[in-house]
Amino acid sequence: MKRTILFTVLLALSAFAITGCKQEKKTAKTSLAAVKKYAQATALEGVVSNDTGVIKTGTVEVSDENGRLITQVAVDKGHYRVEVPANTVLPILLTFSSESGTDKLVAAVIHNTITKYEINPATTAIAKAAKAMGGYTHANMIRAADSSVHAPDANKTTTGWRGDPTTQYGGWH
Image (cartoon, rainbow, N blue to C red):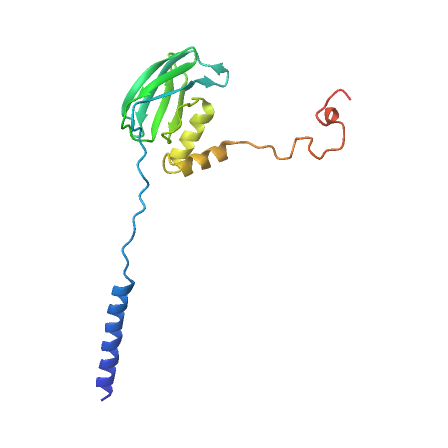
């Protein structure tokens, strides 16, 4: 009798567990981000500079994040304008190389609605940091940009200060 009751209870629990599992089993929804790409040929343009100013000559290469070359253009007086073919999948990289090979700068392109990109040491640092964080996503680019900005430790503005601002900054007073 005890065995029968125990067997019945075990059978009921296992049936409940199996039924409960079937009811709780839900299909996982995959939230894949929509692939961004240029629907039509798009011109990207901007200025190339380093810490000393505008770099007059060199080459800007457009490549995918795996390093496959898409197109390239020569820099003219610090400016570049490059045509990116239709159906180019983002992210892409704009890589500047100087003729002497001393400057190598990068800007990551992740949005298909922005067409002006400066290429400089700051964009290079942001792109490198985002890649180290796992790739050129919007979230990684924001975090990388935020971590590369150096804000002063104290508020250096005159807002709320009641003295002479020229003496605050070592002026003539």
